[in-house]
Length: 153
Image (cartoon, rainbow, N blue to C red; front, side):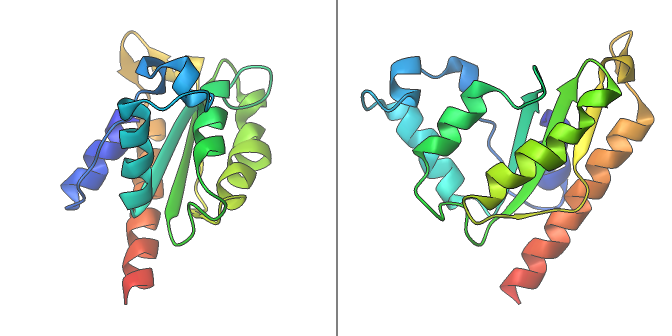
């Protein structure tokens, strides 16, 4: 996730990381207002490219990601470019990109880049990220920047 944001920043984008685990659950569930959740929603609303990173567990994205997307208005991602990034234990969960994250983005109107990024546990060894995984992120970022530029022209 951080690597994707760095690559976007290298291309001139202003970036912000929203760590959903640090946001209050009651506000994420829509039970009360909270400034940090409001700021997170405003950051998403103001973004041109939205990168969603999530662990995959039980074949789907995290509940934290779902509740944030649930707080967005219908068509809240219309005109935005989405990059789907997920991690999981093994390659079998890679289909969660196409069967979970793409529909999640699309349900709110985003255009998702063709190259989803899935990293398995074996691609994170000895504190190092496998080069092919970094290349996949680079490709997704290039696609997002290209789509965003085309939409502006």
